[in-house]
Amino acid sequence: MNQALQLEELAVSRGSGPVISGVNLTVQPGRLMALVGPNGAGKTSLLEAISGVVPASSGSISIDGTSLTKLSRMKRSRLGLVHVEQGRTVFPSLTVQENLELTAVSAKELDQALELFPELQKRRHSASGLLSGGEQQMVVLARAFAAQPKYLLIDEMSLGLAPVVFLRLLPIIRQIADSGVGVLMVEQFAQLSLGIADAALVVSGGKVTYQGEANTLLAEPSVLHAAYLGN
Ligand SMILES: Nc1ncnc2c1ncn2[C@@H]1O[C@H](COP(=O)(O)OP(=O)(O)OP(=O)(O)O)[C@@H](O)[C@H]1O
Image (cartoon, rainbow, N blue to C red):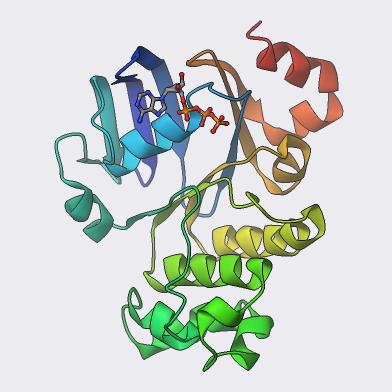
């Protein structure tokens, strides 16, 4: 069986009309793909179509050979697809541990998720609303990891964070991929996300304008620039 999150000729329409078309991609377990592109390119819409927040207008989505295209959001998550949506926050009155208990498969997964974040272990019994913005994003990420995803979609983890705080999260996202999770990460800080990624996908104007090794884009900024411009 083909172990991967796979999209074939995926298209998405929103109120304004088509926003994504003809997307083909494969994310394998243990691999990290950075999805970058200009504002309004359709990156969030693409993640939302994969997890089932919005329907795909055509094309197919599958994980490990099982088609997701017609499945509800809940069924997709039961198959191991976890989506950290843009602007997702903690439940502030719940402690760190209680936030993780909402998704953790068992106490073992909860502890494994906390092991990724020594900062959170120390604050395990603190109300999450009392944590810093960066620590709250760690709770969001830990909560996603505690759900034991096979494939993880992460949308703009850096939103509202100082770059220095985001820099602390990047190696943890790499660690999550190295533990065997396939990660597709949308990020406005293209260079930083490409720096930890294996593969890159650039979307501009709703179409894929680059797909390949992340290193190639880091080594050739002109290729990245051209892809952003839709060339
Ligand atoms: N809920 C919605 N209803 C109608 N149109 C939408 C909706 N959300 C997004 N769009 C439109 O879809 C297009 C793609 O937006 P999307 O948010 O997917 O892009 P993006 O690449 O994630 O942008 P950004 O980097 O600014 O978040 C835009 O033209 C946007 O106006």
